[in-house]
Image (cartoon, rainbow, N blue to C red; front, side, top):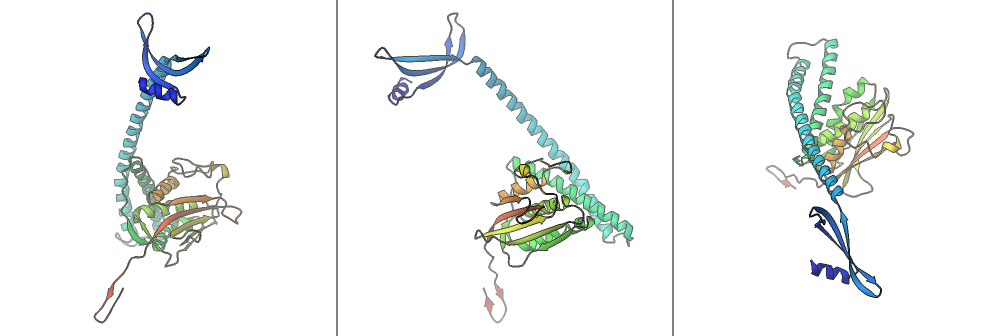
Amino acid sequence: LLRVIQNNLKDKRYTLIEAHCKRRDGSAFPSEIAVNELNVIGEDELCFLIRDVTIRQQSENALRHMVTRLEEHDRAKSQFVSNVSHELKTPLTSMMYAIGNMLQGALGDVPVPIREYLEMLNEDCRRLMGTVNDILDMGKIEAKKLVLSRVRVPFARLVRRSAESLRIQAEAKGIGLDILTPEGSGFADCDPHKMERVILNIVSNAIKYTPDGGHVEVRVSRDARQEGVILLEVEDSGIGIPPEFLHMVTERYFRVGEQASGSGLGLSIARELVELHGGRVELASPPPGKAQGTLATVLLPMAAAPKVLIADDEHYVI
């Protein structure tokens, strides 16, 4: 300790020591002792500044105790939410299976009015299942246990298939849904199921906040600004996002305005899943050159196209 003090004094620095000091009555108290050099009437003296930190230490101990309790409550909350989500998932899966069978005619022809109701039920079940999956994925992300099963996929095809599943939801509100996914846009090295969730969350969010009769456009392209990046753009003509909230809408549970509905997890889960893939999500409201609406852009690293060997009895091509 003395050597440390000497070296610090040479460098014109003070030394801070945590210790316990004794009072005249023999009682001890936690303290901080600052050791420095002080010139007194031409002579260098050691100066010891002793500070009683009893109250601060008590506050720190109380704070640590509170943090521990909060962590325990948070773990209990996460476990409860996870258990409830799993309990919901089982009956939801059975309901969707039964409704799907009825729509396919397993019990005979379904009259048009009944089919419309079944399609509404099926869509509501899908939406609730999406929320349940968001909650389960959120728990895995928090616990750093979410594992991606990556494969190289034609990204445009994945986007088109995922977005098409929301066409009924858009048509129910009279919203035009254009899906522009040209072949040859490129491949992405991703977990198809998780990336499908990203697409569904962003597109369904655009449909939700677009008034009846509005328009949503889904586009896939290569980024002209950065080589090796593939883009998913979802642009809507909806109510838009106030500028002061634009940086907050991808935070968990955050919802904007009185029209907000849902769990507030859709964009948050989408952002976190995209970041796990090495990409990012950007938001602009209104989109460039437009008076209203929102543009959500997903940027992902592009993967090299897989090599395919085609062989027949006459020749082969690589």
